View 1 (cartoon, rainbow, N blue to C red):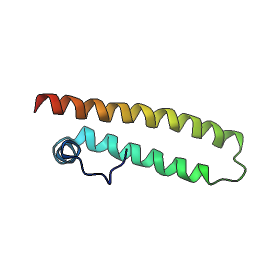
View 2: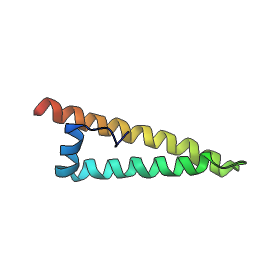
View 3: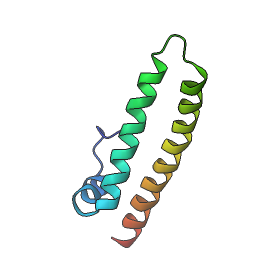
View 4: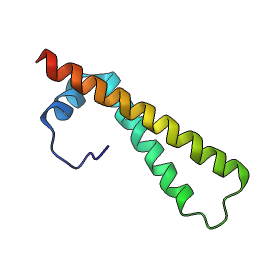
Length: 76
């Protein structure tokens, strides 16, 4: 999720919804760790498994973020 792009719904949810804030924080942490893993020249098996797992978790969190944003948009 690109947090640098202005988005009224996202900005409002970051202010008022602690669950949404936590999901965005998790997404950011996953992205940071994936960047670290991507810079490894020779990742070992555990690091490769971690990368695969983090990609799946990041996608699930992203889906949750967008579902909350969609629900908020419809309700407001």
